[in-house]
Image 1 (cartoon, helix red, strand yellow):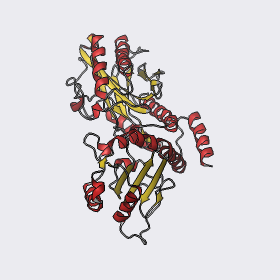
Image 2 (cartoon, helix red, strand yellow):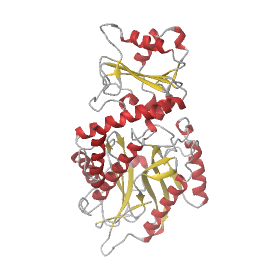
Image 3 (cartoon, one colour):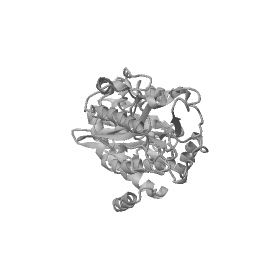
Amino acid sequence: MKKVCFLLLFVSFQIHAQQILSVKEQAVVIDDILADRFNNLLPDLMDRANLDMWILMSREYNEDPVLKTMLPATWLNARRRTIIVFYRNKHMNTLEKLAVARYNFGDNIISAWDKEQQPNQWERLVEIIEERNPNQIGLNYSTHFNIADGLDKTDYDEFMQVLPKPYKSKVVSAEKVAVGWIETRTEREMIIYNQLVDITHDIIAEAFSEKVITAGITTTSDVEWWMRQKVIDLGLQTWFHPTVDVQRSKDDLKGHLYSFSDRPEEQIIVPGDLVHCDFGITYLRLNTDCQELAYVLKPNETVPPQFLIKALKEGNRVQDIFTNNFETGQTGNEILLKSLREAKAEGLKPSIYTHPLGSYGHSSGPTIGMWDSQGGVAGAGDYPLYPNTVYAIELNTTVNIPEWKRDIRVMLEEAGFYGEDGFRYVNGRQTTLLTIPRLKAHKGN
């Protein structure tokens, strides 16, 4: 019954991009996807990491970020102390999913603890470990990946106190499995992701239109709050407050060319402005992150100036150079440095700061530059690229605009998928400037 419901929901969703599922309908989809991930993805991730036992621990309202992505749809938080044990027997091709908790962990993970028979939760966990005698016991601690570092000190200390001595040397970081779980997307999730990004593009297109912006009156802050309210009105969430800013000719610029850290909080949007936004939504436990550009037409203008059209093409060229370097096994730092060299060799002035995207907005996986670390990122930048992963292709290129007597930054960000067949944008990318008041098609391949 659930499978039929899932297919019907997505037929509806694909026909009406702005139609948002009810909370009840979302729960069906979330639990179906979780079951698929547990049964078909997790065994491969554990094998890849050579880990046969993975233990996750959380207390209510202090959830491990990885365990939080595993919560059943009807659970908004962990309950009391929740302990999950995954045991992978590669030889038998089995995966046990056990909850050392008073309750079943939804339909996917059944409780393996009867408090009446064994009053001590920790001792029950030890029994499960001894019965299976794993080669390694993975716990969620990590130096370089914050999302994979969710085990709190109290739980770690209490666990190590009760763990028999022969097993203490088997305790290892579960970083590879935790990061793999967070970064890897399934086929079903990618169907959803296309729709998520489409909704994101639609909201931006509406925000950057005469419906929202009246030149000379509307401020950047007005647009930010409109976007935030739009998300709520649609029944969605956002994982960060939207930002909107403008660039304009030096003669019209009040102040100076600002950096990331000193962007004016509010500016009135006027004709001739190049308007930029940074915006993302959260829906069905996935996240988007998108930056696009719009031009406010001056009187008698019907298209943006040619110099801005050309500047956007330079931004697209940096994107192409960058994503052409995506290759399985290459680290984030290797992809970054190669891309920067190639772009600079073409006379471009790039800055690349791309991050994994998915279960979290700033997710786990290979970090490919930071805006203030263009020489590489230690740790997270040394992690390799794997297939079936999604990234916020976030970057900019500096372009000199003689007509404006200044440099501008063409700042772009789009969700991109890297799979077995290479790279593709999840739902297209901006290749044409949006215009205010006239909307133009802007998605390309």
